[in-house]
Amino acid sequence: MTIGARDVTWWKTSRQRGNVGNNAAMTVGRPLRVRVAIPCGFPRCGQTAAMVELIPHGAVYADGQKDILHEIDISGLFGKGTFRLSDFLRFANYSTYVADYEGFVAAVRGAGDDVAAVLYGLNKEYAPFFCAQCGCSYCGAHWKLEPSFDYGFDYYSGDCPVGHRKFIDH
Image 1 (tube, rainbow, N blue to C red):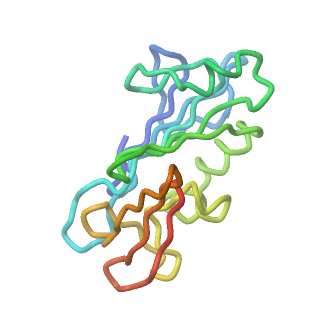
Image 2: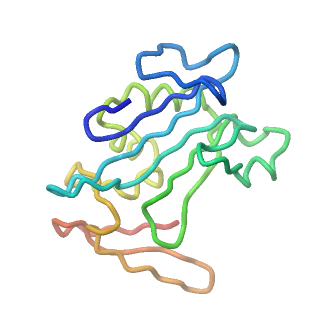
Image 3: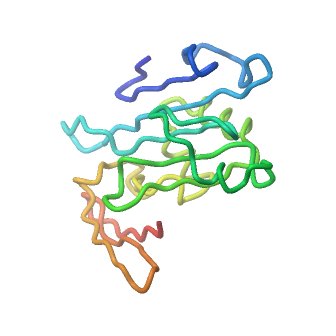
């Protein structure tokens, strides 16, 4: 289903897909999986700034990969789900545990076209593609980011297309 320029998919089970009109965050006792393509806000770009996915503990991502966080934490102590950010940084994807999975899914579902701003409000690391000063998301081609590799501490620094400075620790 397309909303504005981004693609949103709510998975009910591994084989059935629902749409944004579904009201429940749970289906048959199982949390939904969410995948959102956030568009680049640069005029006439048309690219995806980032892909965001939320999966419940033990599930696999849309591309069939299972998160290493689930392999390490087989008991589910660290969270009920995982947040993954991909297709933005050149050298790394980002994933982390989500303790309040149902609340996180509800926040993303309720965000409408403001998913990036909501993610940034929850935790700046969830939306490194989002410039809070512009209120806009940009793809990696429009950010002027330089990677820095310093004895295992990797980060990016640079500017959005308007010139606002950004530091990304991923």
